[in-house]
Structures are given as structure tokens and as C-alpha cells.
Image (cartoon, rainbow, N blue to C red; front, side, top):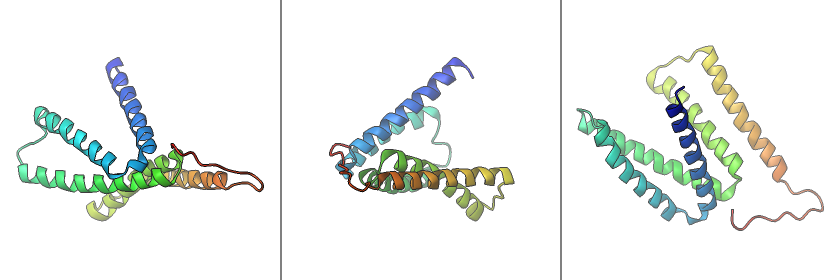
Length: 156
């Protein structure tokens, strides 16, 4: 991997982690936070897509894709914000990241007729087991112990 590629990957990872920490911290803001994020994204992609040649020759198909993607993204962000408001960052984040590959495989099999290899299916199962295990670990650690007074953080 070239130094530039490695730098871009690390910068993307840092931006992604920062976004999720901010999203968790402001999860009580709800719709206004989501609206601001969507507006900023629309401006950024509105500049990037035409410059990169992303419009292609099929403008109606492009617009349908943008519309479907937008609706799915808004639903995802609403569910994610609810999760961040109700749960721990580590559990909600892992569940959100693990759900995507699982749903992608289901959609590929059902809608596109794909037949994943045994190794691919083993990978999907490993992700699902990991997400479920994190949920169980988090659930057992969040139960207050007898005689303890557990306080919730009012900021996060």
C-alpha cells in the first residue's frame, strides 16, 4: 500500500470514528442533528459527483438511485440515533456495522440470485456471532449489581 493510500485510509477511519462519537454525544438532538448532517453531505456530494463523472449517461437511473439511497440512509440514521440515545456506543456501533454485511448478503441472495461460497458464509456467520456476543456482554455488564448504585451519564 502506498503512503498516500495508507494516509487516506487512516484519515477516513479517524473521520468515521469521530463522526460516531459526535453522533453518540449529540443523539438527544435528534432530527436537527440528522438534518445538518444530511445538508452537509448533500453539499459535499453535490460538488464531488459531477466533478468525478459520477452522473454518467443515465440521469433518471442516477436520480432513482439517489432517491432510494437517501431514503435508506435517513431511516438508518434515525435508527442509529435512537440506538445511540438508548444504548452504549460500543454496542450500538458494533450492531450497526455488523447489520450491514448481513443485510447485504441477504439482499444479494434474495434479489440478485447470488450464491455465496462457504468461506463467505462463514465470514457472515462470524460477524453475526460477534455482534450477538457483544450484545450479550454489554447486557450482562449493564445490569446493576446487588447493592450498587449505577448512575447514568447525563452528557453521553
